[in-house]
Image (cartoon, rainbow, N blue to C red):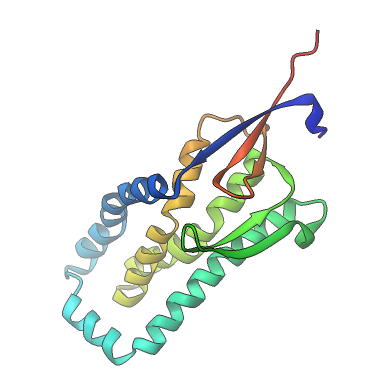
Length: 190
């Protein structure tokens, strides 16, 4: 892919809008995971027991949250690196003081389907699958952690939503400074 043969278009959101739009996933997450949990196990989440467990195991719970955040970013990088010509040399990790969040940045231009896969995987692996396991096993802690990590991937889901109408074969480049990407559309050759 030669960038000179393409028009470059920025597709980004501010951190504030991204966080605001991410809140829209709260109700679907509750409906998709908590409602089946309640119907299958016929029990509500016992938040008093959960609060007590967090109090008693606060270091473990905090450790799981920190490891989950790190794992989330690592999964972005691992997935994108699979598609990159230069592998992990094209992946950069860091922490943004501006948005007060860790990040993973892919420096190579990928096809949108590859970019979407790397965007989706952390929410799937750290959030959706554990939440589903919590529903099927009746384990409240796994359910709640899965729901937390699914909501934590809300920005990723918003990014996927922004790309919903973009052809899978279009090229995308992770934006180095903003939340979002650049899209590359072929120039019309006369």
